[in-house]
Amino acid sequence: MKLGIDLQHNGKPDRLDLGGKHHGFHEYEHIAPFGFALMMRSIEHGHRTFINGMGSYSDRAKRFNTLSCNLVVLCHANAGGGSNGRIFLHPSSSKLNYRRAHRACEYLDTVLPWKTVVKKASGASLNVQKGYKAWTWCAEPFFFDNIDMVRGLDTLALGHHYADAIDMAYGQ
Image (tube, rainbow, N blue to C red; front, side, top):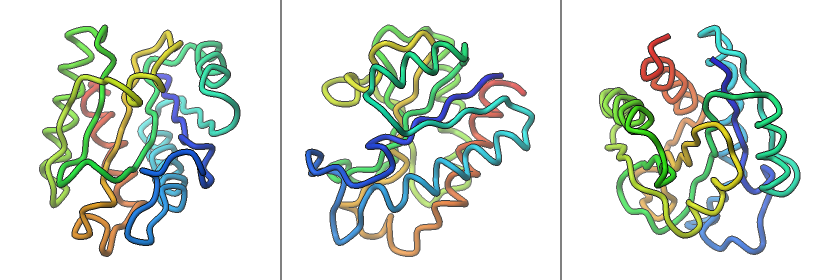
């Protein structure tokens, strides 16, 4: 499988995204290590894996489209989500993509101390998924407004768990 990993907000502070920081935590401090751990573990699983975090959202989609990725994971972490991790899917996603995302969440529920749920994308989680030919998962593995989720957070282990979940969901 060809897997694309998009570090949202260019892996750096985003002055326009107020959801990207909360309780003194900043999204970019956690998403870059999460994304690189996801990439390294996916390579261990034998997936051709590409990572990007530069340019506009449309430029990124074009780059991943050129690589003919099967799945692109858009990595986020924000405030406002509460106590669950989430995988947002484009409303036009196939039933197969929904089944794979649900399968990944079932696995994540066995290794994480919080539940991960699949949601239909809307608003900002939909906007970042525009222009991709591959199926996209807008992954928000944790939310900053739940201090219990971020206290002692091991973003490297979290990235490994997501890679294992994707590998399981795609039947590799």
